[in-house]
Length: 355
Ligand SMILES: C[S@@+](CC[C@H](N)C(=O)[O-])C[C@H]1O[C@@H](n2cnc3c(N)ncnc32)[C@H](O)[C@@H]1O
Image (cartoon, rainbow, N blue to C red; front, side, top):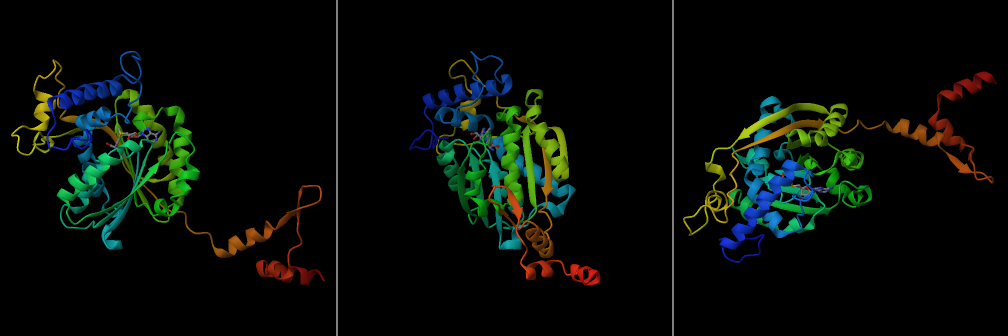
C-alpha cells in the first residue's frame, strides 16, 4: 500500500491512512448499492485513482489473496486430477486472469500448489485488465508478497490491456500463443463489475481464449454472491454448464478468516496496519475489518475439441474449391483430376461401373 501511494518509507502517514479509509468506505458503498444512489455513490470504481487502488487492497486484498487457496483445495478434494500439475512441464504453469487488478489472487494459487513441495517453479501469467494503472501494484505483489513467500518462484507476466465489454478478439489474437497455452483461467471478482448487458461481448472474448487453448483449461470463477450481483455471474454459469465439465458449483458460501493471517505488521512500528486502518478512531469513521466474505464459486474444465481427421479436412477443402465467375457469383471450379480421385477413391468404382 505504501508502494501504491508512491511512498519511500515503509509506513503510511496518518493522512494517507485517512485517505485510504475514506476510499475503502466508498468502495464498499459502491459494491453494496450498485448505482442505487447516484449522487452519493458512483456506479463504478475508478481504479486509475491511487486512493481507490489503495482502498480496494485495504478492503479486500487480504481476503482475495486466500480465496484461490480455498477454492483450489476444495477442487482438489473433489477431483484431484483436474488441477494442472506444474511438474509435467518442468514446474511451469500458465495462468490467465480476467480483471487481474493487483493480481493478489496469485498468492493463494501459489500457496495451494507449493504448500507441500516446490511444485510450481515458473508461473507464466497473462493479466487482462482495462486499467493499466494497476501495473505498479502488481509489481509489488510479485516482487514483495510472492517473492517473500516463494523465493524460488519465477514469475513471467504479460500485461494485456483490454476492456472485456468490447470486442477484444483482434487484440487478444496478438497474444495468441501465450493465451493458447493457458492451463488455468481465473475469473475472480470482475464480473461483479460488469453489467449483464455486456454478457455477449464478454463471452465472445472468453470463448476466443478457450477455443485457442490446445490443452484442458481449468476455469475457476469466484464472485460476490449478494443478490444484486447474482445476474452478473449467472449467465456465465449457464454458458459453462453447456460447454464444459462442471467440477464444483457452489451458489453461495461464506468464507471465514481468523484474524491472524489478516494482520499486517509494519516493520519497526509495533503498529499493525489493520489496527490503523480499521480499529483506531482517526477521522470519526471507523470501518469494520470484515472477517467473512460471501462468494458464489464455480470450477469447471474445458477440453480442446478432438482434432478433425486430415482426410476429412482434405475432402472439405476439395468440395470448397470455388472461384468467382464473371457475374461475381461463386461458381464451381473443375476439380483437378488427381485431387478429386485421391479424395474420393470410392468414386472410381462407381464411374467404372457406369461405363
Ligand atoms: C475487483 S477488481 C478484482 C481484482 C482481482 N481479480 C481480485 O480478485 O482481487 C476488478 C478488476 O476488474 C477490472 N475490470 C472491470 N471491468 C473490466 C472490463 N470491462 N474489462 C477488463 N477489466 C475490467 C478492474 O479494472 C479491476 O482491476
